[in-house]
Length: 198
Image (cartoon, rainbow, N blue to C red; front, side):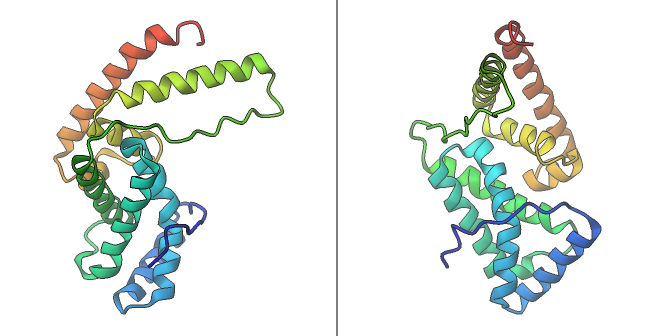
């Protein structure tokens, strides 16, 4: 359908925003292309941020986003309303992302990072910030895709364990265990590498 380049700003998950998403989904059920395009614009940037955290290949991320939204278009009736629409869509993206990783186990290439220095920061401070950023990215890269997804959904999408469990289709306790191991791993790596910068 060629929606891969659609932009859009992340909308806050306010009650009115959720109602708007539900309204759009209702229109998608009756094959309203404009409603689907609007839903795509809402979710594309959110899915890109989420998938980039554990897929790492920009081309694959875009492909998985499109595959995810294709399910939304082709199978809208599989959304029962038992969970939030975002939980359903993120769950599809998570499973599609894991499937894409299993298909391609070639070397991981880091996506390009925005390293523009702020005009407000002095060079030494900016260098320190970049160092911390690089160490954090490296540490996250060492986690498994499942552990990266839990960290990403918790800290960058502000979701609770119950919702993450729905997205990842696993028990709540499994999410807690993955977070425990991810935190322990990150703490072990970061305590030494960031000692000079914290």
